[in-house]
Length: 147
Image (tube, rainbow, N blue to C red; front, side, top):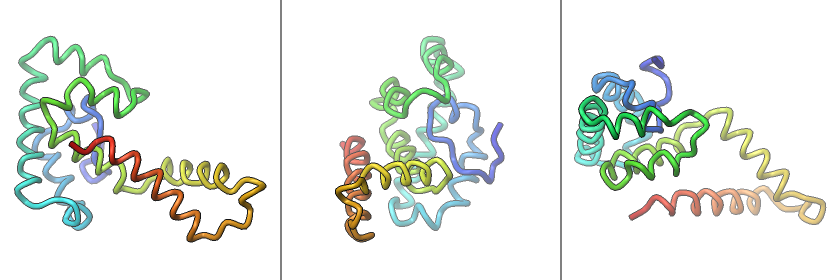
């Protein structure tokens, strides 16, 4: 199991391994970042859906099999396509968490985008222009999770 102080998991098969208390602890640890996106009412809905997910994982064999078949190689979209309609607040929260918390994978992804966008013909693209390209790519990614 992950360290309770680490970045929150974002995929269903990771969430079911996390106790409700650990999930709340992770939310509190990163509250200063989440305050920009969520009200306390929205956070409570997310916590309630996490508890419901854990209960459903224990009590519903079909759901348990679906979740247990997922892996870390599964995409966010594929994982949440199974559960998104049933746990919309939890799915949205996990999508936001995936974009809020920095890690080496996002840095590597950013450098890949920079190499792609700053090709031979765009070599003199300013940092401001490059930032706009990267934000547009992130916007398109986040937009697919909005209702």
